[in-house]
Length: 596
Image 1 (tube, rainbow, N blue to C red):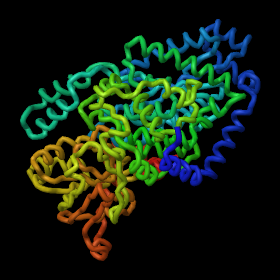
Image 2 (cartoon, rainbow, N blue to C red; image 1 turned 30 degrees about the vertical axis):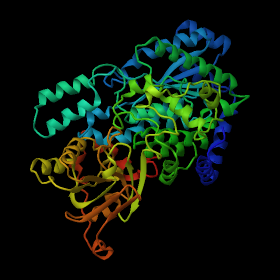
Image 3 (cartoon, rainbow, N blue to C red; image 1 turned 90 degrees about the vertical axis):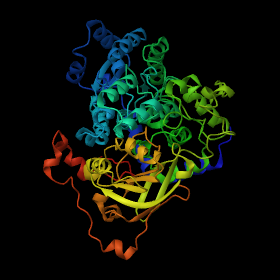
């Protein structure tokens, strides 16, 4: 298929911008790739330590045959429903590796926190930084340097980007990502949202709310809405780093077990190709500018999580590729919205999978020239070869997936905003068309608690642009502000014209109201957001892409900036004090919020 000129243009501009950094990355990767294998170059004492705890039969085979050795990097814990299934994976993977005559060891576990548990809690201020901790932990596991390939086990919000960043720092290794799948459909997401709004209005109590939440989140597997975790899986499919079609297979299904075994088979094949065809086998060479653009397109075409405008900038940077928000904005203007999965529609990810899932969306994009098909995948086939065998979308599934000639929207589900308040991201795929432009007086808060108190006191019962500032990476680690969603939805349902402007993040599950998020520069870095006052008019225009404080430049410049309420040491209990280094060194949201 001929690549659409817009897709080619964005890919070329990223390639030109990244020329120096990508060349440096590739040079480092090729040096590592061309070394002798660890069994031949490492000292005997080093190797003895690496193999000491192996079963005797495996140790004998390693010594006699020197087979490739696989690393498992696992984000298993049994608190995250999405990661609980991984408990059994190492045994399954090792058994398959033995069948193939390979060595296999768990190289490291990486931390994995659940944003659903920490929403609105102090722990959420560690969430974004956990991505880089996961990348570091991945690097520590692989730094033992006795592996010929890696399997990365992770699903959720910061875990997949962290694993991918860490793996790309070992770009000479063939690497396969192994998903675990979503939980079965429970209480429909729309009904869950309505229960939350009723609780916010005081119509039902805590017991009824908890009962509804437990009916929604009820078993092992990923949450069934299309938030950051499930967007991760969509993007990995688009990058060719999964066994094709494995993203949303149920955790306890036979298909899932087969896909996990096939992941080991794929890695074994990539290792065989490593020296003769490194561009088709080593993750650092496979993940090039085209693959990053494919991930960006998949995000836009499905109305995925806004978090990925932070995470995939960081992922690209780990491979020496420089991406900015303008790249997303340009692509969004030409990539149609082909899927509606909650919160962008009524279907959950299980319905999405039944309708054809990620591969069908990618197939429709590729057939329209909106996806690079000439890229390698871990299956050994090109992306085009995989997608050529996928059947077209069926008419009966058009409520969930549509072809490009009949999209839900002619443009992607995200928009970049710019103006005197800075640059921001807005998810446009979920809120009504008549809310594309909001102009209203501001009400300013520096904490989520202050916002909630104002709502309970009835002070927000009007047209309002809610400003929640000092929520950026440097201020307090950039927590998600998903708990604000129910309250703002209640106000919107009353007929008020409401919007949110913040330097914090919103969950990938949000989007029922206009929200200008990730505002850069953040308030803690001297952004104009720190000078906004109650009553100031703010215009949020998702049509023209503008975010403006309607106050004269002279008046705004002569105002005293508000102080960061998170500066006091007392506010960094519950582990937050350990992350002061991250807050002081972290880059802006637009540059990936990287602490490295």
